[in-house]
Image (tube, rainbow, N blue to C red; front, side):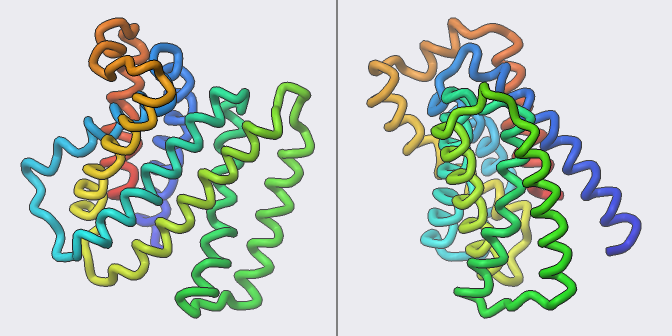
Length: 224
């Protein structure tokens, strides 16, 4: 990794770190499925100026369902089940371990001994952070957070299979997928309150959080 890539990696980490706080503000006015739908309704607006990547619709749909819909629906539900923002950021990093296992199983991408050692050190660090958690963490919140990380890992493997496809158009067009399933979940769980109705009653800080999640944390960070 050269210096430019290292800087971009740090920038992405900062953007996503702020996103875990923004989620908390967003959920103050929106339910988990509503915030998911809004995030990607904002992100997918870029399809009007970004041409569709040369990849099958089936791949775009599967990536949208795993990398975005599954990950963020589960993560946002985890927040509603008491998962703190700081702990949420830790749970999502477990996607790296899930990704390695899935890549080894389905892509025959076997990690080297040095990489395994590095992951072991990283996992020990995550475990150490986990041991410092207070009593406010629920098993359901933790389980949903880890399930979201696993969905992210599935999406990573699917993205890896789309070799030669530019990342930015793929992210933009995959953002078309989450709003519909998220809206369906919202219709079932939120007593049929339309997302637009919730939007009219939301606070400005919640709306700003949704905009941040749809632009910076999705389009910008994933493209980087």
